[in-house]
Length: 328
Figure (spheres, rainbow, N blue to C red):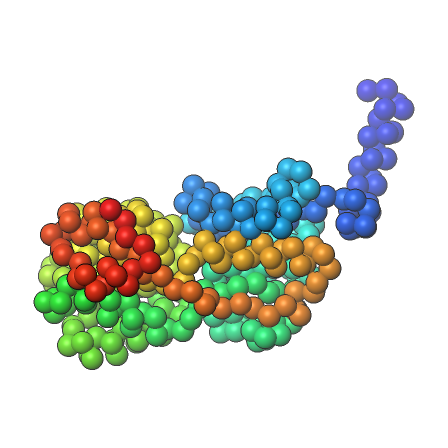
């Protein structure tokens, strides 16, 4: 390389960081990041919803915004290093879709804005001081509506299998909030005259053991409590539920699309679309700590009639009328 050309490249690299710090006033294209706990293909519906929300606000990846995508593929142990990598890149903000990714990013930076999406209770997790005034560098949305939703899910599942006396509950003790949700299912089970069979699963390796225990105890249905690991491996869980002929309930519609019987919970893709509004506000100068954290306001019931037919179940007409979506 000629000396003049080399000096030009060197000068450009030395000037890049100061120029980036000048912000949008200089015409610099903002660079944001996504720190995902799932594999990219599993997260596709959420990524698509987020990109759609950005597009609605005038942000188009590759044109006026750059997105650094990072996914741990369900391996939580990779999240701290991925978060540290994004901090070194000096991105303008980081979107953290789940509780584990939010906690990893929080430990990595106190200055870069973090936008949460489908995290658990942000106050209980220690992410923010309050929902109304988060303070610090974190804001966004939560999918937490209180542990009571688990009891409602149990009630809806019981409507489909009214003669069942024992239900299995799959939960992850490593996930904050699952213990409270489990207690709510126990309260609801007593009111419905059901016997619960709680089964722990901390990793994919625990699935086969848990389903073997359900079969041994002749559980008649399965409720899976909300957890990013269960969402990541929803196809595997759908296969196991089908193999063991267990009607299964979860919180997210994506699981029903994968073959589960039912879901009841917040519209998760809509949360990701809404997350784009936080990105937009922060890139335009808003301070994360001043932006209240949003809670879900819309809940949806989704039923898979094809799965019901395979299991030999008839969905009550009253339940079908209440469903937001029926997959046939």
